[in-house]
Length: 162
Image (tube, rainbow, N blue to C red; front, side, top):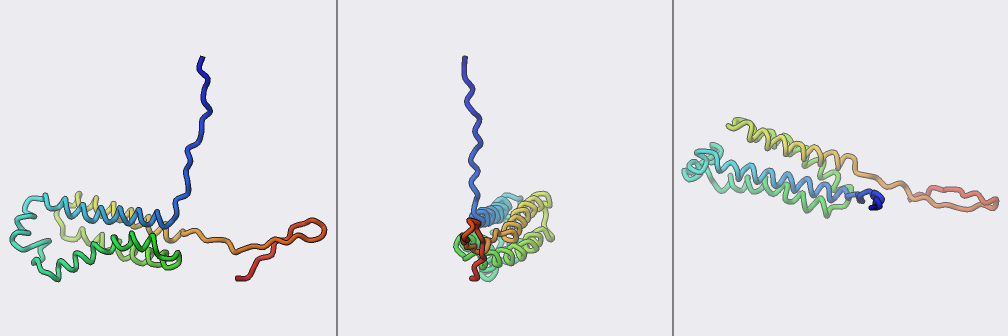
């Protein structure tokens, strides 16, 4: 006869907000890149690129500087989310994610293949909304509290002024 092992609960350690933000920005970065990479397989895209046109724009150095700058935003947000102090981190994530949402939606404008681009935009927006939620609900620490024992044995809490 076998004895049944006691059931244990899986450990679920708390994930720091900085790690959640960095993970979400990593997802945004990959979606951003893979939507562009997969778009190369659409009929006519490579032919247009070889003819010097991308997304109806003439290929030029300023255009590619713009593309690189836009791609660098989520890349740098991964790093900044892990390294900035909490207050600056929260504000930076709220501002940048708020700006990225309309930019992501703009990628749908005038495009063909609305299901493909629509899914890409929807997934990016979901991650950006998560970023906004993580940053907005960033946990706060309680003020430091000192305890003092008084002669009758009771403990009195006094809030320290910082």
